[in-house]
Image (cartoon, rainbow, N blue to C red; front, top):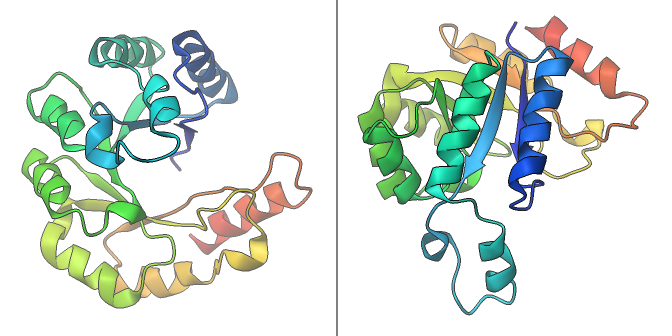
Length: 206
């Protein structure tokens, strides 16, 4: 069993706070930390967007990410990197960012340029499928092949209602892709009384 904690973007560009999140991941007994990384804001958001300036202030620099990854390694935690732009992937390909796994977000399912860079890296890929269809998933296997290490089942909105997760999808995926690991991405609220039950059920399903 491999459990990792996701920082997403709730550090809001606060470098020291992100380090504290990594400390929390270590204290929780997690095996790794997942980071969503964007270096080039202009690639993922229009300058005309109403919150463009606010989002840009939340970005960490390439140098800061290098320090964050070094800090994570020193905690003996694996690095799961979700690249949101091509600049980030170039840092991976140039061996600046040393990740154990890459993670393709469901919203990047049709970002051909980004997917091409991910494929060139040959790093094991975690695929967050969200509400994607079986045909869409099949196309990803045709493209990435055995590079796909794990399929993550989950509902991306927060907080998630368990009735929206469609957790029985795990059984179908196990039959269709017996050589691929299946994971569960939990987005339920920390104070949801059923949260632990949900994760135990996902574990029982395999």
